Image 1 (cartoon, rainbow, N blue to C red):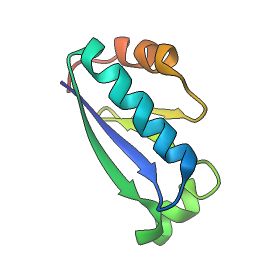
Image 2: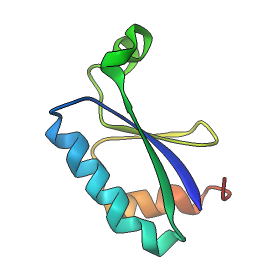
Image 3: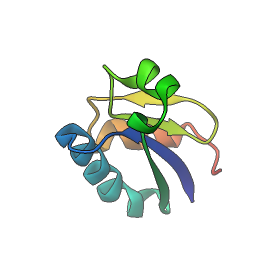
Image 4: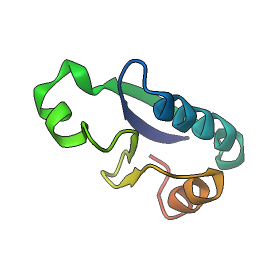
Length: 83
Protein backbone atom coordinates (compact mmCIF):
# COMPACT_ATOMS: atom_id res chain seq x y z
CA UNK A 1 0.00 0.00 0.00
CA UNK A 2 1.27 3.44 -0.96
CA UNK A 3 1.22 6.19 1.68
CA UNK A 4 0.44 9.73 0.59
CA UNK A 5 -0.20 13.00 2.37
CA UNK A 6 -2.56 15.49 0.74
CA UNK A 7 -1.86 19.07 1.76
CA UNK A 8 -5.23 20.75 1.59
CA UNK A 9 -7.53 23.19 3.33
CA UNK A 10 -11.23 23.45 4.04
CA UNK A 11 -13.36 24.56 1.10
CA UNK A 12 -10.67 23.94 -1.52
CA UNK A 13 -12.46 22.50 -4.56
CA UNK A 14 -9.16 21.60 -6.24
CA UNK A 15 -8.23 19.60 -3.13
CA UNK A 16 -11.50 17.71 -3.41
CA UNK A 17 -10.68 16.94 -7.05
CA UNK A 18 -7.20 15.75 -6.03
CA UNK A 19 -8.67 13.43 -3.40
CA UNK A 20 -11.04 12.04 -6.05
CA UNK A 21 -8.08 11.31 -8.34
CA UNK A 22 -6.34 9.49 -5.47
CA UNK A 23 -9.46 7.42 -4.84
CA UNK A 24 -9.72 6.59 -8.54
CA UNK A 25 -6.08 5.45 -8.75
CA UNK A 26 -5.97 3.58 -5.44
CA UNK A 27 -7.24 0.19 -6.65
CA UNK A 28 -4.85 0.13 -9.61
CA UNK A 29 -1.76 0.57 -7.42
CA UNK A 30 -2.64 -1.86 -4.64
CA UNK A 31 -4.23 0.76 -2.41
CA UNK A 32 -3.36 4.22 -1.14
CA UNK A 33 -3.40 5.26 2.51
CA UNK A 34 -4.21 8.97 2.29
CA UNK A 35 -3.60 11.38 5.15
CA UNK A 36 -5.19 14.78 4.61
CA UNK A 37 -3.39 17.66 6.30
CA UNK A 38 -5.08 21.06 6.61
CA UNK A 39 -2.38 23.66 6.00
CA UNK A 40 -4.42 26.28 7.88
CA UNK A 41 -3.49 24.54 11.13
CA UNK A 42 0.22 25.33 10.75
CA UNK A 43 1.87 28.64 9.90
CA UNK A 44 4.84 26.79 8.38
CA UNK A 45 2.63 24.63 6.16
CA UNK A 46 0.51 27.61 5.16
CA UNK A 47 3.62 29.56 4.19
CA UNK A 48 4.99 26.63 2.17
CA UNK A 49 1.80 25.42 0.45
CA UNK A 50 -0.63 28.35 0.67
CA UNK A 51 -0.40 29.20 -3.02
CA UNK A 52 0.17 25.70 -4.38
CA UNK A 53 -2.38 23.32 -2.80
CA UNK A 54 -3.31 20.66 -3.46
CA UNK A 55 0.04 18.91 -3.16
CA UNK A 56 0.59 15.18 -2.66
CA UNK A 57 3.64 14.02 -0.73
CA UNK A 58 4.79 10.43 -0.93
CA UNK A 59 6.15 8.72 2.19
CA UNK A 60 9.64 9.08 0.67
CA UNK A 61 9.27 12.89 0.62
CA UNK A 62 8.77 13.41 -3.12
CA UNK A 63 5.89 15.67 -4.03
CA UNK A 64 3.40 15.89 -6.86
CA UNK A 65 1.84 19.30 -7.36
CA UNK A 66 -1.53 20.08 -8.87
CA UNK A 67 -2.66 19.79 -11.58
CA UNK A 68 -2.40 16.03 -11.95
CA UNK A 69 -4.64 13.40 -13.45
CA UNK A 70 -4.96 9.68 -12.82
CA UNK A 71 -2.30 8.87 -15.44
CA UNK A 72 0.29 11.25 -13.97
CA UNK A 73 -0.41 10.03 -10.42
CA UNK A 74 0.00 6.42 -11.54
CA UNK A 75 3.33 7.33 -13.18
CA UNK A 76 4.45 9.12 -10.01
CA UNK A 77 3.59 6.08 -7.89
CA UNK A 78 5.24 3.59 -10.26
CA UNK A 79 8.61 5.14 -9.44
CA UNK A 80 8.09 4.60 -5.70
CA UNK A 81 8.77 1.72 -3.43
CA UNK A 82 5.74 0.62 -1.46
CA UNK A 83 5.96 2.53 1.80
